[in-house]
Amino acid sequence: MKRRDFLKISGAGLAGAAAVSCIGGGKSGKDADGQAQMEYRTNPVNGDKVSLLGFGCMRWPMIDGKDGKKVIDQQAVNEMVDYALAHGVNYFDTSPAYLMGQSEKAAGDALARHPRESYFIATKLSNFRSFSKEESIRMYLDSFKQMHTDYFDYYLLHGIGLGGMEAFRNRYIDNGIIDFLQEEKAAGRIRNLGFSFHGKKDCFDSFLAMHDSSEIKWDFCQIEMNYIDWKHADGVRNVNADYLYAELEKRGIPMVIMEPLLGGRLANVPSDIARQMKTREPDKSLASWAFRFCGTYPGVLCILSGMESMDPLLDNLNTFCGFQPLNEEELEFMERMAARMMEYPQVNCTGCQYCMPCPWGIDIPGIFRHYNSSITEGSFAHTREQKDYAKLKKAYLTTYDKAIPTVRQADHCIGCGICMSHCPQSIPIPTELARINDYIEKLKQDTL
Image (cartoon, rainbow, N blue to C red):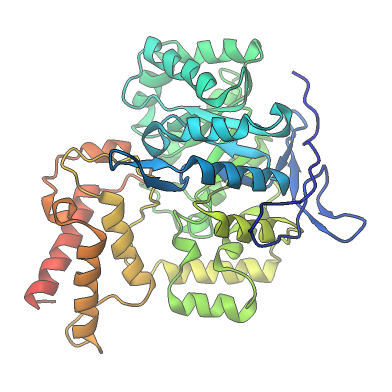
């Protein structure tokens, strides 16, 4: 299927938004007038020129619907997609599982207002709960309808590694789905077939062994990569990204990066780390350091960012237009910051919401987000001897009750563990909820 280079659009932008000196086009750097251009990477498999910044569609802006439930703000999505396209972003990544099944339609409705050849669609077979051949094919075909397209540029087996090789065989091999998808690729309805990985090293090695033996040829791979997980993954729930990167690079498999900000944690780092970054780059955001880290590595085709509003979109465009990779000294600095980050007792939650809805109504990501934020912002009460302990204690308990309704708080967890099978970080969720609830009770009883 022949593709043209990304449609050149002038950077006219969105009315009312702050101006960004960034335009689209087929090359990177600056144009003849000195205007910054989006950084593009060429896919070595097929020559696609892909924007280094990819739009992750897992965190669309939400509003209250007529029934009181959260729904996607389609008008805001349309405006963000228009602005992203006009400023060079051409890769959009979604899934039937994102935002309780709403993400694909929102992305499809917004993108369908533009020429199909001006963007790349990436979506996934997210058959976690029902993996019969019939149900998996139904999900696959429904994605075409939601995305208003007759082909997918990048199609992924979603979250392989979760549940180990047995789960992979159940979801894709034994039901014949992998054969079906390869037939769809041969027919041109899938241009690139790959997978997103969450799991242990032995699973990853097995998936690449399939590639080496030509049992399944992977056109690309989506991995979790950031300056924390580069060398500090725990090896149990996830794998060091330097290993994943090296194995894919030597095989010439292009990489799409997810969680470059660890669910936003690297855009809001603890104050002492933020101070060191700001001393070096006072005019740059904390998030820009994390994105530049990932983009420094040439095997990276695209870096996904979930952007809930125009503000992070504008900031990201300023990072990726006229992109500047990190030098060796800066990479060493990032490793020191990563080691420092590991000293903070945060929950490794990225806010993906795969654990939701909880059958008991618990706001799992909200509880983790509140706990992590208190540590990041330096407002964490950890001992009664601490300076301003009483003030910090009151602030945590008050903000907790405001952020998480009583019936959705950690003390309502019964430990059923249903959530754990869906967590891409393999977080022991009931254990972490119990730990946070124990911390809250100690605050209330003054027994820290």
